[in-house]
Amino acid sequence: MNRTIKSLISRGIDSKLAKKIVDEGYTITSLSTCSIEKRKRLGIDENLYQQIFDSSRPPISEEIVDNLFNKSRRTCCICRDSTRSIIIHHIEEWSVCMSNKESNLVVLCLQHHDEAHTKRELSQNLTPKQIKSAKQKWEKKVRELDKQILNTDFKELNVTTEKLSNLKKQWYKFLQNLGMKVEIISDPFEKLKFDFRIFGKTNLLVKVFEIEKIDDLINVDDLKQDLYGDHFLDSLIVLGVKPFLSNDGYYSGEQNIQIGWIYSYGEGSWDNVMLKEKNDISNSKFYVENLLYENTNYKNFLTKSDYSEIMRIWND
Image (cartoon, rainbow, N blue to C red):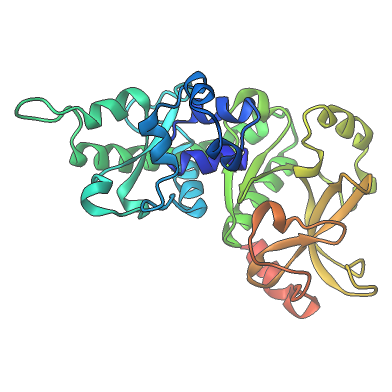
């Protein structure tokens, strides 16, 4: 997801309007100086504009937005209709609790968001209790769907071998156990190209192949060609048969634990993705962490001394 879209959603804007704002070429900064006429054309009235730039109401943190989207598949927990525009709703009103805690937030479509804010004479269309219950049930269902995909879709959709199917499952669980926010892709079109995505400041897409080095990827040129037009090349991680040790680190001769490869767009070649302290990831030609993390650097890579622990997690 585009970072400006996520930032707008974290300020109470629905996903459809956020996408329209970005498609028109606006950032948060340029939107702040936008004329009233242009704001109206975008569909931003004065109340909404004030909400976006209300300094007394901090935006929801990116980590919590990612968690909410990951656990709900960016889908309303009431209707579970993934085609609808979504918004992050405060279960207990912000004006009352002033809380952006994940437990007080839920993903709703616009229709059910309106119902949650519409009060009848003696009742409310959607009560906080009903919303909390629906959120809990939908997040449980999403977990069940993820397990179902792990057990069936990885094999059936990709018409692949049992070995590759199990490898995809192993990578998914491994990345989860490292603490990364990983989501199995459910969109039918994206499923044909990718296996799952990693959430962060932006998203990285992941594809698993039965290879030990990037040169073993027979269709590497086709892959680059397929993704070039969609600008996915520099946000696609290719994973092989397992994590591995390599001396091809940023500093010459460094031995690092590496998990796969990413295409360094500016360099025009593939580069290694390395595990770092706290299991962040990085690579040598450009910062993967610029896409995923705020405060990482080139130091503190995991090395041979950490390899046995990483392989324990891998084998678990």
